Length: 186
Image (cartoon, rainbow, N blue to C red; front, side, top):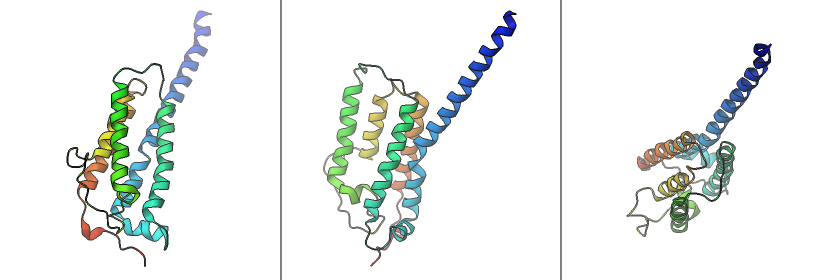
């Protein structure tokens, strides 16, 4: 009798574990979503310009799609997070400096410089002001600092997965061949 009553609990535990695993896989896919998109746009910029069509700014269109993918990324991260308040003390300086770097990069480069404008044939001026020249890939460093700030809430493997995505993209972007840049549609 005792054995019989314990079987439904085992099945219930198995179902919960299976659902948790499925949610983890969905979250991992959501976290990785933007990186293939960035790879394709970096590797085939002319195709993106052709898709955007004449009269449309490919950097602006990339920004819209990137913002949507970023929303899906955050929703995926939130789905596996467990929040508690107050956050650890390391949270505040990491999130503040990380977001400062992100905003500063966008302020200096603008939308075209941030969203592959140089790959789409736009003239993006070379920037040497802080954080450029001091921190390599400051936008990715800022994003990684912000992710580290969230380690008390988000399981490590999801933060690591996001880090690996940034690492892959930063390596890809460091090896640009000017001959593969797109020609803007006239």
